Structures are given as structure tokens and as C-alpha cells.
Length: 416
Image (tube, rainbow, N blue to C red; front, side, top):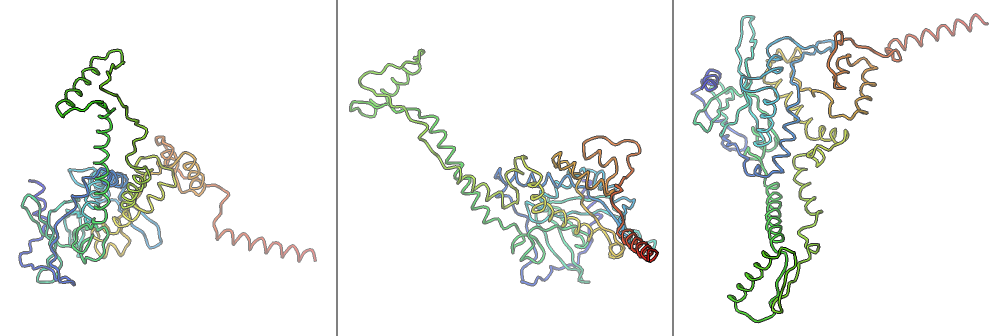
């Protein structure tokens, strides 16, 4: 009930609104979709891997000064992104939920709750919470001043209308639809993936039945006389009683029956190459390789996964959050939201040592950052940065070379 009250206060009270006119003539009303493919265990595992990796990110409010230096402003935005974006979620849970909603619906909506302060003559927003939501239906509207609004409907029957500019809307596969991610209808276009999943499901069902039959039928009893169905049933029951009573493992069979064992090594269900191809085609749909799915990956494999699958999401999150959270003036003076990787713990020990050598010699890491990379706790005074004396500023190099050239010229003159 408290959450409904928050949304009621934050929602725009715009009664005189009409549906937005879209370029293709469609009515801008979209229902959330995406439940069919998520019954597949492979699909859920792929999304879970992506969401789990995204949940490790560290969102930060930074400001880039006119001289190019980056600073971290003190304020409520960084406090929310450091501990809890809202009273119901931690930061990692917030990121995980937002990613799941995006992967399921190809659209993810986050509602910022803020207070506006106009005491300085311009709007200054004080953010109090960020809530990811999962509406059942979305409508785009325009008020009489032609401002774009968005109305969310929920399964409970509640609905809220916000200024679209105040809603964080992240889209996946944003293509033919003017407003929503996904296909032309503003929903996930999973028809190609559904065909692959249906084939995979059919194969799994067939394998399940084949395994049960193969495990149940161990041999064939050949009856060497002509008998009717009742006689065959009686002969089978007699054979089963012989099996049940055979403690020595020796089965006596008279001239009427012949025991023919089935060669299990000759039974083949489906070749592994076909199964591997089908599985890889599903994994490729989500940009998740088998080593990433199993957790048995190298540094290079994770880097490829990050650049192909995670990095586009990281960039999109940062740009969308920045565009919505900050006013035009705040954006002009260098404010933005950046989603940083927490650490490099996925790297191998050799890769970490190489990173320490390269970044450490350049003075890019503090002592505590170096310790954290190796899994050690911080120490007192660990904020110190050290740099190798083997490196020198480019400008100093040029100055040094000019001085040496001048000294050489003077020396040559003296010798003459």
C-alpha cells in the first residue's frame, strides 16, 4: 500500500490526455509479453548468467570538469546507488531485477522518486528512490501542451501516469517500433527462437521416453510354441516369477522359452553433434557461450562475453539513467551515471599480476586497490599511489631532448 501511495504522489495528474499519434498509424498501447520461451531451462540459465553479471556493477554519479578530471559528487544519488536504491532492494538485486525485466520484455521501466527544489531559480532534483516496475500494459499519451506521457497498468487494476521524460525506459532490440523495444508490436519477437526451443523440447521428450523404454526392456523372451494372447501373458508371468525367485542369478528356462538379451551398446538415441548444434544456437541467441554458462571460462572467453553481451547493456544503462536523472543544465556541466565493473576477480592469477605491473607502474592503482585485486583487505595508509621512475611526462621528454641538443651544440662549438 505504501508503494502505491508513493506512485500516486509521483504520477502526473493529467486527465486531459489523448493517445499519441504514431508515424505508422498504430495505437501506442503495448502489453508486456514474453512468458512462452522462459519455460526453457536453457533460456533461464542464459538470462540468469547475464543478470548475475550485471548485478555486480557499481553505478556511480560522476562529474567531468572542464579540464577533463572526473570527480564523484557527494549527494543522495551516490548514497542510493551505494546501499539501496529503494527500501525493498539492495543495489545488486535492483540491477538483477532490471536486467531480468529487460531480457523478458525487451523493455524495462524504472520510476525515479524525487523532490524538486526551485529555490535557486532552476530545478534541482533530490532523489529518494528508484523502483523497477513490471506493468501488464503501457500506453503513450499526449497532454494539451503536446508533452509526452506514459501510463502504466498493473495486474492489480491500478494505473499511474507519468511524464515520459521522468521515466527511465531501457529498450532492447530497439528497431521498427517508434517507442518500444522488440518487434513492430512493441513486444519480444521470439518466433525464431521458439522454433529452436520446440525442436529441443521434442528431442528431450523423445529422449525421455527412449531412456525409459531402454531401461525397462532388458531382453526378449522368445516363445517357441504357437500360443494365443492369454497363453503369452501366462508365459510372461511365469518368466517374471522365475526372475523374482532366482537368488543365484541363474535363470532356468525350458524348451518352450528362449531368453534373448538386448545389446545396449547398439542403442543410439541422437548424435551428440546434433544436440551440441541445437544447444549452441540457443546460447548464441543470448550471446552466452557454453564455458560462460558452466563457469569454466578463460580470461579471453569472459572478455569476449563482456564485449559482446554485457558492454552494450552497461553503455545503454549509463546513457538512459543519465538522460533521465539529470536536467539539461546538469548534463551540460558534466554530470552522468556510469556503471563500473566492481573488480577484476574473474581474471587468472597471471593476468592479475600483469595488470598490477602495468597499471601499478603507471600510478593508476592505490596500494589498497592492488591488495583488493589479490583478495587481501585494505591497510592503513593504503590510499597512497606509487609510480615507476622509468616513465616520464611527454612534455618533459621533449624539454630534456632540446636541452641535450643545446648542450651538444655548445660542446661542439667549444671544441672548434
